[in-house]
Length: 473
Image (cartoon, rainbow, N blue to C red; front, top):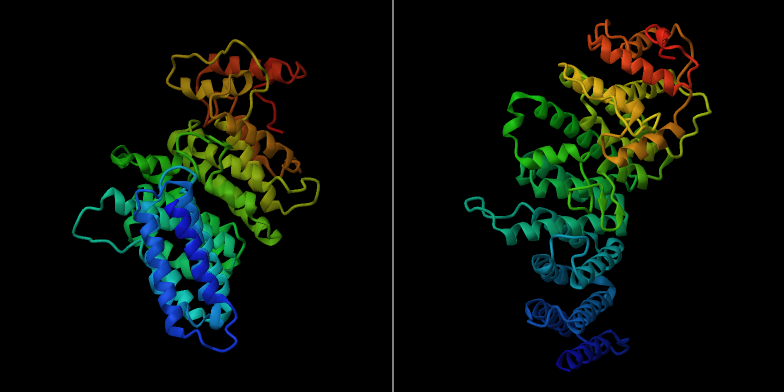
């Protein structure tokens, strides 16, 4: 009952101040006092023992709605005064909101909605205080006592401010707002707390990937270059001798494909179905046709670089490194017409991708079989296992990767142009089932099993004894 009375009083207060002042009797000082009163009441809601009640959440939303309505009177001249107090209200809300899960609560949503309204209104009326407000929120992520260990509450504030700024960018959808926030995020990734593996770094990477997906060219290129460089860097660090001492978060950032947005980072399958990797989120949400072409080229090139690096360090056991990228490749190729003429350089990238898909055993099994010939005791056993199971099954990796490979196949152009032009590739492909080659396993028995499996997969159209010389084409 008390909360309902407060809500009614707040509405009456707002109406009395936003009503057309034909006689000019409502002074600027009175409006300032009303704004201060409403902000204090909103802060009281956040501290209240009733803050989790729906009625209290509705009161909080009503107070913020009143704040924006009063601030928009007199042509926006009250914004400068309001935003100084409102920034503190935003930070307090982020401190009280949940930092885990997909929902930070009704009060967080109310603050986000009001922030967007104020920014959109102030952008044309008085941009300077709006810029200061946005920059202040972004800088608050780094504003903590460097001489004391950061506690959970402070991390909670940082994580929620990052989420609020990311969502604010999406809803406001202005290149200038992105250009204001992104440099501060990148600075944090390169020099601040987020420069080391941890939750803060993962959340900022989530945020910048959402900014890139908006399709503003400058920010898109900055983010994509940063993320791809980060992915290759993580691969190198994991492959190095020091990788065993890396924090668990460093490995998780690579293993989940520069990683999963809105998930528990345990699986690509969240409570609401399939969640998207950061690369996949960009591929899914990017609508600019020119940037989609650019991202397709860059992503396929990254796959080639990752495949080459993984093969040089781990041989045929590089699926963990290439696999997380496949859903993004599938998404960016979903609108690609494979029947049109394409540049030789792009065709080469597609061929490289399929070479590494075959080498790492990432393709769906060609023949479903209840039995597997993958057991072997040789030193090359794991390599042989991958090769044979790629034909006979069962699928060894994340099922989402298997689905992605099927989607990629639908957007792949014909890989065969001439048998001479791609001679080097054919020799590499031939090495997959030729144990005597430079890259072969040296295990003739395992190779014989593999050739038999391949012959069966081709429906017996090629005899087993011809498999040692069959062209990759």
